[in-house]
Image (cartoon, rainbow, N blue to C red; front, side, top):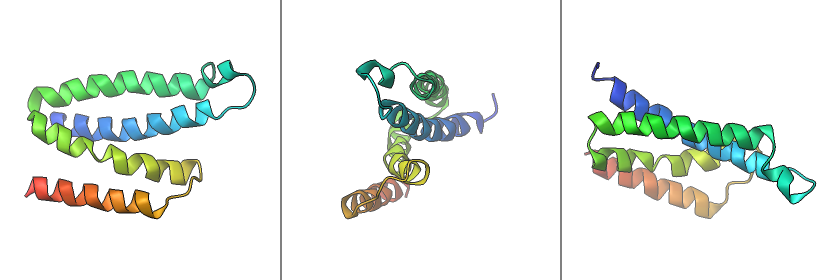
Length: 112
């Protein structure tokens, strides 16, 4: 396998995690009876993307050290609120932005 496959799988898994979280949030917010949050296209797509995400993470872990995967996986905590703000028009408050900055500093320190 080419060397770029494992980092690419990790990057795709990180992006899919954020997007699938937004799909689950969108599906859970459906009105109506309690089971409407479980039985809709957005929720089903979110769970399906989590399956793909898991397979991509396994591929990433086959070629990258665990500490690298865990550190870079923290980007999901930045991308998920950002995707929610863009796609669901959710508000980003100061706590979320501060935490995001701290996560970025941690990833930068780890990467040096």
